[in-house]
Length: 425
Image (cartoon, rainbow, N blue to C red):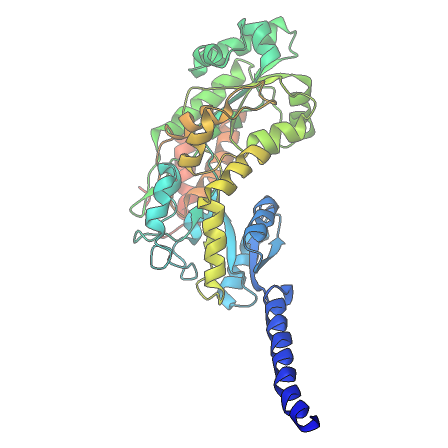
């Protein structure tokens, strides 16, 4: 009996050990320490929501998020990619910098297998797609944000001075700058200089954002930029500008107090400008179409081509851009207008904004997005537009430069100095 028992106990013990070992393996599989990890860099914290939802869907992938706000982001990103020192697996690129980075040799080719992004981006708006591909037509970054613009207006002021706050009727009254300027003159007089049509001239200039400055290595000054010079000077001469600087305390207060009627702005203005600066004015706002269709801003997401976590990195990029369930949640919970027109069109008929007086804002922006001109920006556009043209526009507006011809001469001079490789007539 004892010898028989000893022979029996050995396999039972082995079996028990095997069960414990198997259980340990299963436990280890869900252990956070065994998770895949990816590092994501951005210049804002808006990815927090997406990361939370991504980790819920993919509990085996941990996202280490690094927010680097301010002007140092691009410098740090370039340095990290070039030196391979602690470079992120995934990183965000602001619209103004996308053409500067799209051709650098550190961005993964997302057109290639297994990504096949060319098929996926067909769900996005053409104006977004235009900047996702490098000079050879390969997708290197994917824009997850839809940024068509419109004119946000105060409904109470519209009722008082236009006789209606209905978005369609307001749109008909402000479809040219001449109409807006005439309204501005009227409200300035009737309000005793307390209400103005526009906060500043940026609202005019931003309505034509995106027109390229360079083609085939040559400076090209689009006639629209000359038209804007005339418009901003006329706006000041007719006293329709409140003269608040973007981001200033006065600019923010004007939204809360109802001192400005019209604010041309993109989709993201709803969350990050109006709700942020005027949280107590819910229901007092509407959206109307203005004199031009435009897009402003936007964010793209790319993968480091030397990442050792490409599979997980691609899951994150794909999730952020093409997971319809997530995008619908993002739209509903964050008032976030995505670049995915399939999702936006599905939401357009039902999604409304209490802040915008119950208006179907996704319907408005879905229509506006399909009217945005398609421009393929160049790596020079951001610097020429911001550092050269906008500065000269301010000098022209102030009378420090007298004629448009002088503005053109200065643009050409400054571009030659900044970019000697460009052809400038």
